[in-house]
Every structure is written in structure tokens, then in C-alpha cells.
Length: 96
Image (cartoon, rainbow, N blue to C red):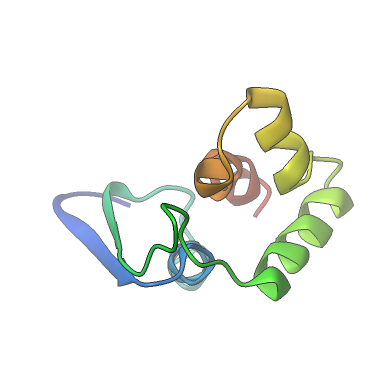
């Protein structure tokens, strides 16, 4: 969905934020959201909270589509854990 008004997602958990984005894309049968703003709070030692069940479910979805898992992409790109879902989300949403 391309719009002049951004979709705003506010969360305290990185996985929950990307989960909401995923559900929005799925519910609206679209492959992109533009513009999209995600606001995160609740960091611990500079790292956002994550939900391992969501990360695991995303990994299963990616593997079924012959895509790299969240951890593999973060290792390949050399990104920090706090950015791994941001990097993989594009791949995951393209698989929808």
C-alpha cells in the first residue's frame, strides 16, 4: 500500500512490531507499506525485546520458501541482533 499518510506501529517488542506489519500486509493482501514508521521502546542494554516464538515461526515460514532464516541473514549481513528482523522482513513479505 502506498499512501501519503504513514502507517504507524508503536511497540515495546521488535517481534510484535514486525508481526503487526506482517498481519497488516496479509489482511490487506498487499506486498508493501509505504510509508511505514515503527517506534520501539523498552530496550534492555540497547537491545529490543523479542518474542522467540514469533522468530521461530518466521524462520519456519522462510525455510518452507527456501529463504534464509533470521539468524542466517543477520550473520551474512553482519547486522546486529536488533536489526535482524528489519533485514529479513522484506524477504518474508515477498514470500506471501
